[in-house]
Length: 325
Image (cartoon, rainbow, N blue to C red; front, side, top):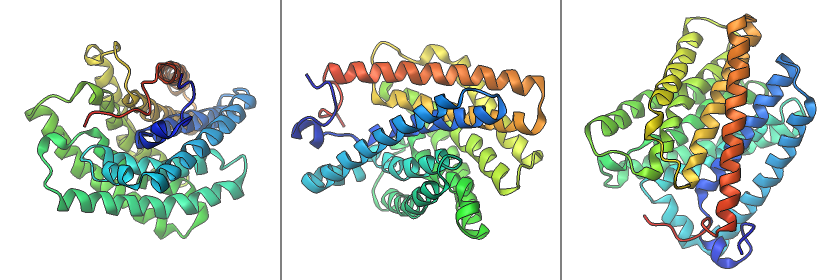
């Protein structure tokens, strides 16, 4: 049985770049418990354990994908030129950036190292993917919430970037990320409202709508040294509204068949939880306190459930196999 990923060349050839969404989800949860340790006095051991699991899994996945690139470059090229899968290439750079944030308090030197790899890699992926979108003859049905991924990554850069580089570097990434979020929000909403419904495996990516404003709040919070003003609260309430709207549409989520895209539930929820924890740290209100607790429980539960379904998929040899386009 393919109990573990990467036991043979067949699984290596079909190792999907979408699996880096696992690292994003686990990194998000790790950061949640890092913030909760400081703000809610949760046990430090939870954060530390998650950090080591996240790190080991990242290097496992990264090594696997490098080997795939060396042994099966045509498979990597096919992913990078796919109208949907190409967006997930940026999950690699986002994984570096999220690990940078996760290590920020634990090991600052390691944090900066991850940042210096992730930031230029993020710029490279963003430019490459946007160039592909412009040059290739894409159709409106190809657009989907996953297109936010290479854009959202830019908004992650300032979180550690304000300590690692001059301020204008962080401002560059922040402004580009927020600008293209608005552009692609219009494109994707037009596709969802006026064209064919999303495929079943892409329905979970609707949660990606939460990530840009939630990360915008976090990044703005860092850039302004913890300012809670009209800009930051506007971003937070946009993320919160989208979260409530998606819960209101809970019947549309099919739980009968597992896809790797289920990991799209995880990181956006973690981003909203982190934003709520930061807001609680600034305001110290009863509402933000119980909101933080609720979102922590929800995010932990969702990531735990999706992790179990992923392990079950590994045992049943449903992961790292040839996928339909």
